[in-house]
Image (cartoon, rainbow, N blue to C red):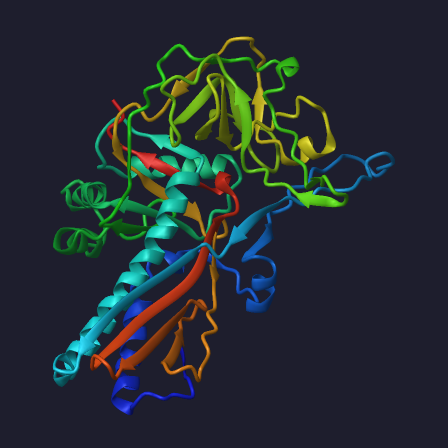
Length: 428
């Protein structure tokens, strides 16, 4: 933790109190500590409109033999936009009478820091829940190791690194898993079962760190019907050819966000953003070897654009265009059909339990620069991740009231939706 004070300094008692606030703020940053961090430069971000393009991992094909004549080609580096899009603030005021109880000031400060920490955790959860594309539907309620092992399997099959994986479960789903650990059929060393019984603690399961959410999102049942189809023939061009850049109208080139693509289907009536689905004959591949997993690729609806078009994530990168960049970033194999059936996976309303690899989601800490000599007392603190909290105080002589505000600026980006996903229970 780093702590600095402005020219208009606080007294020692307030500084100590602010140090305690920052420590509590850092302790509560649970989910945000399980994602990667991009420590940006504040002047650069201001000049760039608080947006920066972050690179996605390269995926390179290999070739056989010693003679590689004809195999030399340029490789496409894809990137995604990341913004400082969250400006969170907790303001309050205290009268000269209320200030007689100094403890109230500290309690309000801790409450403000707690709320800001919650805002950051919720932002991470929302991005993971809404943009993760690896979808694991389970027909029963949460209760066994096998449920989480399905998340492990879908990640392994598609080449997601096996370390630094996290799973956040709603309270009911988490406690359902804990109940399974308590069962007499389990034969651990005793500590895991006891912790599950005493504290509903699940801990590490199937390669995932698990966390309990008290504010999990809920997803609605898909209402698009069971007769929707898509033309997956090459001529229909319902596939994505990734591009690093495109020509700008006024010359030069602009970066491209390849995380989504627009497709045409038989009808989008009642289809909604957030729906998850598979397409008959479209199987996921291992992202490195490009071998079929034998499992249908899962997709999410990002937006419904017209009666027959919708934007999905990820795009169908099937190499049907036979280009070098498609081969490099291919994520599925298509058995072509003019009427491939679309099957929705979120068939019942349920809590959304996000899981992700640490490098998939990234936090961008922001920095405010209020003037130090403009009549307000200013203090700053930062967590180990670089997330900054700014504490300001100003007295109004007219009303004998003191105004306070605690602020933080940050961004969250899902750099790779195919390295994150959602676990849905009770899908019957």
